[in-house]
Length: 266
Image (cartoon, rainbow, N blue to C red; front, top):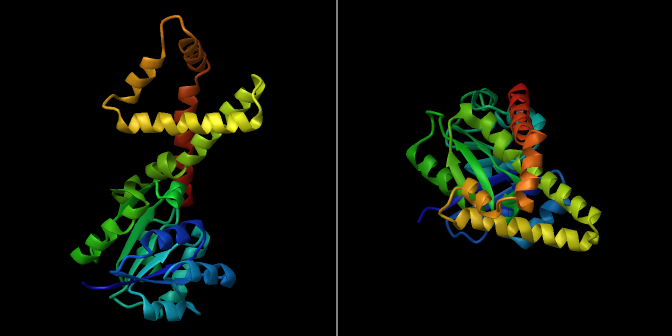
């Protein structure tokens, strides 16, 4: 069994989640680099990660490089790395808004690149990932490894680069929409007399149960919604109010705005 050497540059929320998700795999040797030395040391003590002392050391140790820094840091980082990158390297970027073409330019075509868009539930192994492997320089063994690299952290969808802005708007930003609606329901619960602690627990339970039902049921979510909406009942009264105030349209417009902003960032 071949051991793959994988380096993670940037050990923040997503970078550390990737390390923890891959920790314990016998076919992957993990290396990491972060400006916060204390954070890097703590993660190396928690996992099998080997902490690198410099970018160039990491490039010597690893063949696959997961770039998990902020988008505005990616061009400078890859420009610095370019002097030591080899054709055997594979650069995997999880930075929002950095297109595949931009990544290829950043590495000057020295090695193949992969674009990935995760979302934050990956931190609890329930993420949804988009992966673009359209770079013709990628070999079959590269695609096979990258294709299953993120599966310990959630669902993986292989998409073309052209769909990444849409994916970012719906799924990448999606947790914020869910938390926004949860927060509104919690405020409603407090308004109706529940304590904040009770509101917090009840709404979290509501979302946990509802998403489990949506995932496990054979019915479309529209049918599940109808199942709760009894004639002349409380639920249909609430839903009618949401429709009268164009909440559905506002959500669609909000996602479109996110998509347009993602295109602008690119």
